[in-house]
Length: 216
Image (cartoon, rainbow, N blue to C red):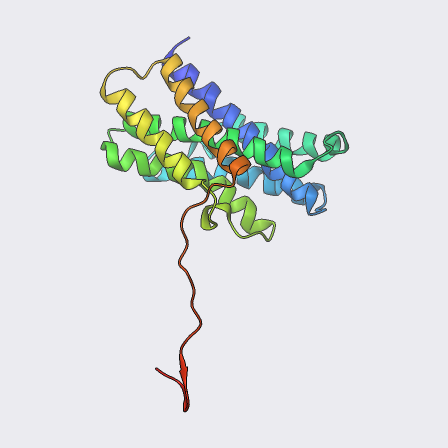
């Protein structure tokens, strides 16, 4: 299997996983069939469209290759019809989202590196590719985007993209190490959810007030 074929398969797998994640979130919000498919497609293709536009790959693969849109739409529609079999939709969404995060982190970073983007920029593109679909999904379903909460989400993607960039720099960007990088992102995301790890947030203190009212 060539590198390009492996990247395509990983990309389409990420599309299917994020489509399932977006569709599951939409089902939990009781959207109709069109709404479920639309949210699933946005979740699946949003990050990839951003990536391709940034690396000047026009038109983006989501528009130029029918397999992307069809994979996303068919997966989302399947979730709409099969969702009664998912006993715990929230758990399903979180696991699928973690898998999509991992796959898109790896493929986004690799594609940026292949486009001769410097390592730092490639890491940023990989991270944004990974979180873009979840951002669109949460906005469309009326949730505060995961990336803006305290959860370890974008940090996991950034750590994975750095790992991919290092593997590429040392000539070790082959199937097994890249799979290990994806598993690392997936595991970090799930473990952080399980153990409730979070990024620090500012401590809010009530304003001091004097005898004449609040002090500015």
